[in-house]
Image (cartoon, rainbow, N blue to C red; front, side, top):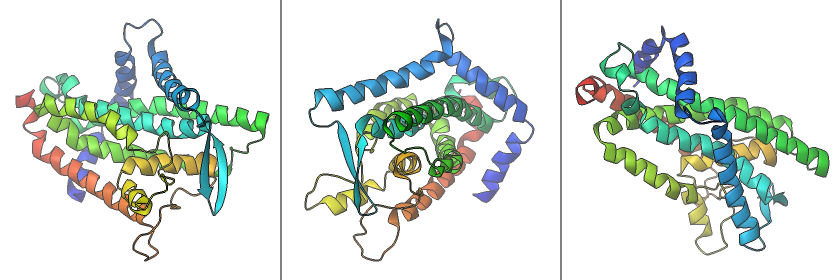
Length: 296
């Protein structure tokens, strides 16, 4: 795997400027012909968040606040803030998965007509999502700052600096995933359609609008909460909340340990999944790379 990743690195070595130029071009191309252009990159997630917030605070009664157990204490969060801090990483994840899967197919000219390393297509596509993510994080920080100033909530803290670590990890995780999904989607458009279709389902299996740490109290609660940590998207959503509103380090786990061994299973499982995804993506990219021009 190390050799494959080093090969991918070598493909990037002489294309740094082109990658960043193409990442801007990719963003412009997506909103080409629209009167307000890239502003749609903000309007779409903002409207989607508003719909979910309205549904869960106005449409469904008594869901205006969220109670979270942190360090043995129950802390109450405004539902909008709770959903906002989960929705910002989710939007990046969702866009990275769907756009990453179709990146090679929609940029086939770089594979069939231009001598351009295929792996760099996936990189500049992912970077184009990062620009939007930075802007959404900045808006989120502004909103948290306003809540601090008006309501004295104290959301802004030094824990937010963990974003500097979380964002690159999240970027690399889903870039590694696209190394595997993009070549396969170039071979089969059905796989691309399937990925797009299941993303809405994955949304509800991820704690974006609810806390995966506080599922309904049932006899199965411990098992269900433990099962939720196998969804790596949960790790990023919870990590952003820890950094921006929980005032905790992102590796702190709230998930009960059904084994009683005192192991931080949330972190252990995520690290294993990270290595698995990167290995899978790198190997799949290597096995399909040479046949892509013929298929496209």
